[in-house]
Image 1 (cartoon, rainbow, N blue to C red):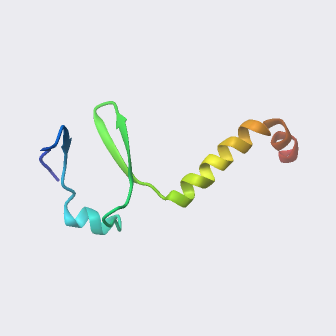
Image 2 (cartoon, helix red, strand yellow):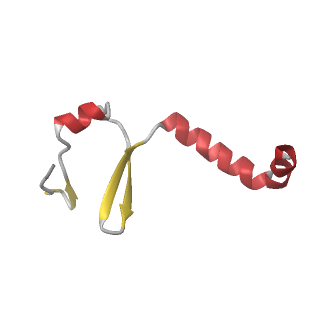
Length: 73
């Protein structure tokens, strides 16, 4: 699938084709994370609830790493 980049103000944007929107169950207002990977771009729908959980996990894992290691044994 090929899409054309378009100027949007001072930025460049692209239009996602309907089949991609449908396949990923996207809707207006959804948030996508963008990852630059060598010579490619990866767009990933962001789940706000998961993002909160992941941040809490990261903090707990950092602050209580030794205790978690002991519990894992």
